Length: 416
Image 1: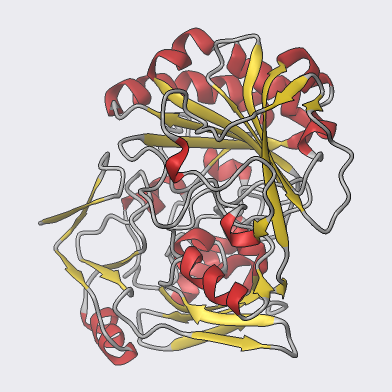
Image 2: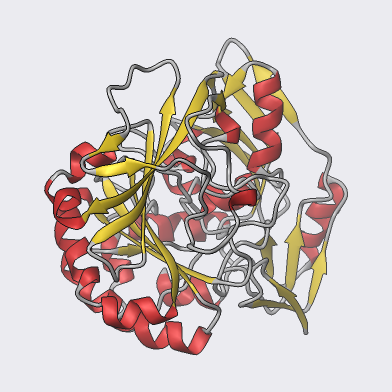
């Protein structure tokens, strides 16, 4: 048995071996001759989603692909490419994606398969930009799907259950510039009363807190330079920072993207962290729960009620928003969402002991856990949160009837 650790070091993915094919033919040979297969992306999952008793397949050794279609305003890229690399190439060509996650280090295929997202009231998660994709299935067939196909909405956020995503076609738009400012000490009472106004005060907005104080420590505003803004040096009582900051107190902001309102390319401002540096804080565990945005204030208050248990093992929490979509396993399926993210210290036992209390507190709001982060779901409620889960199960069995791409995670949380 081989163990391949994720980038944060909290989890070791288990497999008989790890394969890195250099061509589509090599990848096809692996999936058609192996008993069990799982895709391995940029190693950003914090749980057993990639685990297998067979072969872990990384497509990072495959040839890069980058093809812009000016007529359709799309770019087709290799699924294993990182968002930061694709974004740089796009910007050089005068184009942009609609959103970026906080880390540019993650792979395209892995991010869309887990409904990973950035922040913004008007911005869907990264998977909503997908126009098409090519999936190498267990029988060796390369299946192409395009937005509008009957199976498309089920195949984009797929958790790797359908096959290896070889290429992805993404919607693009003309390149734009973004300026980033941080405001400190936003009173909780104000934030909750005016949550919609705060979260819509820029193109992308993130609130950072450790839950222990009477104010939100930092509000990160990422504004498009081409959109007018009336925000001055205060934001609902919070004051503009006068020096660069890291969201975790006491850590150098060196690896954070540029701040203080200096405009720059979209891909160098929308992520929180620079591509050239170690992501986030490194040694950590992450959890995240998405609830309908209409429950934002109540869900946040529920977390504040657990502050005494959360804060001692927390590095930082981030509150973000994401727009609704119609992708079957998206955590924002059917309704605009607010995202409650937790970056924990790397103490797996302590985190897993606390998560049931957090999940119980958020259960009245239909909280959906991020597929790639640590959650417990001891009451097995996750399947009930996805109205089209039965359709997804049927899709999986059509694509992979022998469950070559199955594993314990999918059996536990999807039932297939």
